[in-house]
Image 1: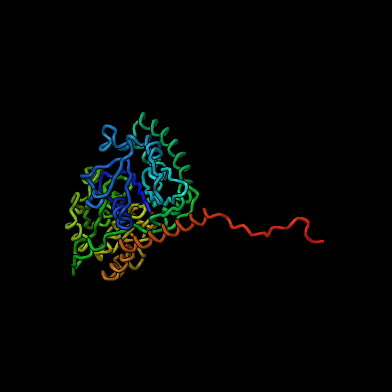
Image 2 (image 1 turned 30 degrees about the vertical axis):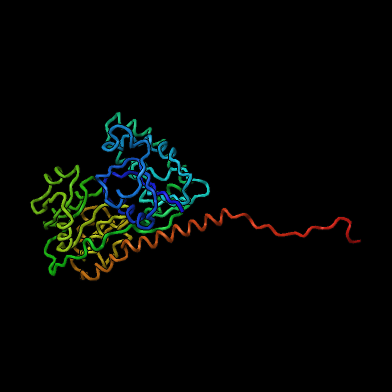
Length: 384
């Protein structure tokens, strides 16, 4: 069986690329197709596979400014020749599922999310652009939205990374989706022991608007409690300038430092709405409870009152109430760490392979010729 995996772009290692690595472990002989590929910025596991770029990768500046070529990506996907493949797996967060597979092939889409900047985050993204760019993006986004919705019909089976995304797929594409949570490297953060959690509260996040780190900072200003922020991004300088003295910023940290922060933190503060959210699972693997906004993927990962606390309004007041509720609870690190075991890589591989097998069986059944009842020939003139 020949297998193609289509991933939107390969210019770094984040959650989507961790999923791709596990897909490659499931299907070692698979070929990879992507818009833009930078071998120096991906893992050895990806580099050792056959990777083919669309024509986007040959355009000047594509590796550094791939987003500028978004309007050309639909055509680039449709020009890929996937004729010889029996199974096509698209990894969708940017344009990937729009490939044209052979009619006999099975196309399974693992959807991290329908493109956020076309749907849920469209108003916020558009508001960040200048007048000319806003007008151009509005036109391009409208056309891309039409194409994106139409190409949902090219997928035989959708798999979502959370119940939240499954609902978004139903709303945007009108399709049902199974749920297979993405893989999390539990061992990476589960091996550091800290008998006393004296590191205060912790935020681990990219510093961009929708992560709502500003909300956490305001809550801790009012509580007058220490908070550590690990991560960087375009909002770093402004948030640091406006933060109270007890909020310290570490910038981007390495895995060893992050493991220590998780192990010593009293709790992780997770104030944004995420499609899934790997950070809370990493924290829980280290025995660190999570105080999270109760929408999005956190509803799948954090068990309220057992591995953390959920708050339902994205306001400083609601977060403060959640922190006070958390302070009154007893959440043993062992119980919290056990709650993270549902999200390991082996579990992902088993569940995803089962979904693929189910999709291929359904496709084979749909293509099988309809059974026709046998009718014995009648001899002309026989009988009276």
